Image (cartoon, rainbow, N blue to C red):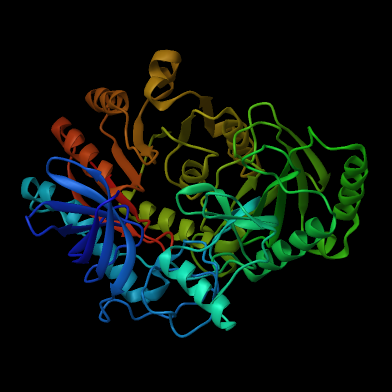
Length: 536
């Protein structure tokens, strides 16, 4: 039986929203699932190590009122707080995301600054002149996501823990209402905490892929995206086609992805389905539904492009290696623009990008404009070539090139489809003759395609925006080898302060210097942080 720790005070939080506390014997506790500094919590130990234990929060007994001063805005907000309400609002079953809604945006930014400063404590002993700048706030606290993915499923949670289950039992016995509204279940799954519902669409329960929380709307996407979601959800529900069952791997509806061009007001819908086991009657229902999607008045008015992805794999993903995509209406993609500056002149000189169903684009458009704009200021004047080692669809490199930074661009990206989009994006911005894009992993860029080095004459800037794990050791070596031959600036955009610090320590050993770190908030209401730094 798992050991329970009662009334533990959380001292602080680190990257990834991991809370830090101490046991009575001094052993460290690493805490997941909703830690906030100053909170008093009950914990369940899930892993024992020699010097520390890992634990999950089972109940929040008290919150620090100096930190928790925000207003919860989402009906699907959920916390493990012992009291029956947050901001005295009735709550539906929570999705487990956006846990920082209880904090004012000012306090969210302070916590994120503390996390970044804490991550750099060790390296600042080596680099005392290093400055951590104040966090750049997101232009929008809500409704900022330009992409969202919903999942269909049958299984929903009976509750989010003992309190919810006990409360539901009490209310059933007393025939009173509860502050948690559950969809009408069809049956209890024996020996589990699952209730089987015929039809749910929303988000996976935190940490458990088979449990789908049915939601009505999401506060992180726009009103327009929520309207489209609500309408498609109802069309799917009334079609009488079954949702996909993550346990039996049968059923039709799997995922719904909505993408929005924040500046262009265009919408792309991608409905992921599985059709391998449809019976004859259901095949006709599918045809009828697709005709509805093509001709529905609201969808014709609001949705620029609508595609269906047929994915019959076992993996719980929008698409698999062997899936196929059919365009029902539109061109199968939308456009987005990044605008740097204000006024009509900036709008006329905006950088355009094609966004296809599976291409990568920064999730917060207005934030991307701030991030790239700040990066341009920090980099300063650039002559010569730009090398972008994780270029994706070319968003950063093309933005730099079109705004007058550098003369030419070489982009490296492991995903071949992203490279195709990058070529197209360069073309629609009139830069096709100034770019070269290659589908290679960054760590093998020069070994798989040695002729790349011949294209890097007069290298002025290297851009790296790596995955969460940071730089591969071969990439570090490659950058350092380039440094021996060219005197260039290095722009590093990171989504992980921990691996960022590790990479800085490696790079400063090779004659790079760094003066300041600029944190930027990409995802308000969550713990995620982006940082920009330039090495010279």
